[in-house]
Length: 114
Image 1 (cartoon, rainbow, N blue to C red):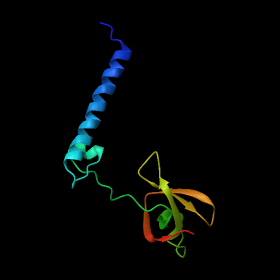
Image 2 (spheres, rainbow, N blue to C red; image 1 turned 45 degrees about the horizontal axis):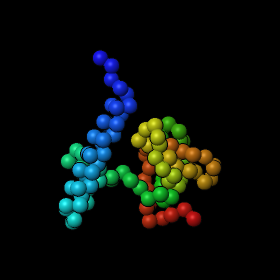
Image 3 (tube, rainbow, N blue to C red; image 1 turned 30 degrees about the horizontal axis):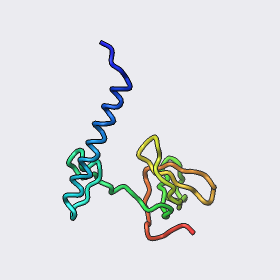
């Protein structure tokens, strides 16, 4: 049995369009409660605890194997964003002028890099 790809694609788009409009209709009915598409789809509010303020200062932890006894345990970097390949942060080291990717960062969101 052959299926026409264009007709199938239009059906999928029509279905997704009706699903998106359902989320919008639910959103318009409840004026005091705003929902994002993920919450509308799954019924569970997504967590955004890991979001950080862009361009804030972060202290990147240096692993024990890469430092000696008297070296610093961390160094300051500026948050650029999130790594595409893993759940790490992408930071800029202004001293060495390099991009650093690390998961072990403590952020000071009140301080910005000027």
